[in-house]
Image (cartoon, rainbow, N blue to C red):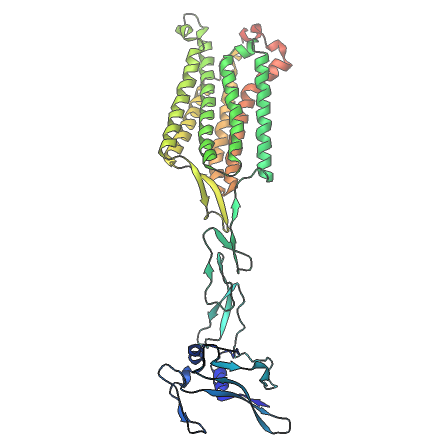
Amino acid sequence: MTHMNDLEESRLSHCEPIVVKESFPKSSINAQLHHYLKNVYFKNNLDEEIFFTENRDLNTGYNIINIVYLPNGVLHREIVGSYNPYASQGQNFIINEEAIVWESTFTQTPPQAKCSESCPPGFMKLTRESEPICCFDCIPCPQGEISNQSDMNNCMKCQEDHWSNHKRDTCIPKLIIFLSYEEALGMALTTSSIIFSLINTIILGIFIHYRDTPIVRSNNRGISYILLISLMICFLCSLIFIGRPDPVTCILRHTTFGMTFSISLSSILAKTITVIMAFHATKPGSKLRKWMGSRISYTIILSCSLFQFILCLIWLFSAPPFPYHNMQSEIGAILIECNEGSMIAFYCVLGFLGFLASISFITAFLSRNLPDSFNEAKYITFSMLVFCSVWITFIPTYLSTRGKYMVAVEIFAIQASSAGLLGCIFMPKCCSILLRPDMNSRKYLTKKP
């Protein structure tokens, strides 16, 4: 049988692992192995004084002996190492691991004097209360923290643009998230934008081809052209919202959206006012005859668009939109989005659009009961009802979504509201032009209800 010397037995009783190495620094081995022997003082067989100094350094060297009981009962002492405090660094502690004979009752050699297994990378040690320091639990590192070594007391936090991997032993770059053209959602929105713009182009072509017919001329074809072109730009501007945001696209997103929608809504307001003026101008002695013409309509469009343009300039010169790396919105990811910059300017632009939409809706609603020959007000009323419904529904939906889906909701609102205006105002006219030529006559439009 093999018996350990006193130093080894003492180490096991204090739950310190026996780690055998070829060399140790002098201060390290004294601090770890002999701190409990600082008051020891005795003489060896050679009458040499053995004691520890105030720095816990041994004043002399010694041999490390492995005591072995041979099968025949003979006690055998085998020198397996030595310690010399005056030797050079790296040669002061020497041990031969292969020469050590461990007791056969050990289940593991060299024996590990621990009550807990080592914590692998990705875990940290949590000492158990009222138990020796060698007794601990292994706790997984929290999200965003790692431990890349065994038996770490604390986990290390990853950098702000990095995140812990699944094993919590390495920091990896965070996933970059934005609405991309390559993903299914981005492709679907891109396709719908192109399809709507093509439909818009076809309707514009029909109106240009039949520009001299009564239906096209009845409500100022110039305003119809402006409205159709602005709606086409609305469909296409939704493409700016797709892709990785950069300083240019962030500026163009909401300014282009604000300008094109202000032109569209002011054109609708001008068309509604034209319908009302045209009806009242037909009455005998009406003073509105001198106001008939395109001048008043173009003035409305120009003034409203100019006011929105000034708001956009103030926005861009005060605090323009810019790309922002949002690291708090989604765990383990960086959401690249456009920060509006000045929220006051942003809400002023949206507020003016809401004002134009409200005025257009109220004006069209009040004129909805005009005779059938001037029934475009009914179509405008319904189109503005669709427009307002889309954007009223947009607000809670937008606030309840996160990440790239917020951008998708905004694109959907732009396309849906634009499609509502296009379909409700121009589709009935296209059906009359193409399918009911008899309705596309001056006699039909001027007949009494």
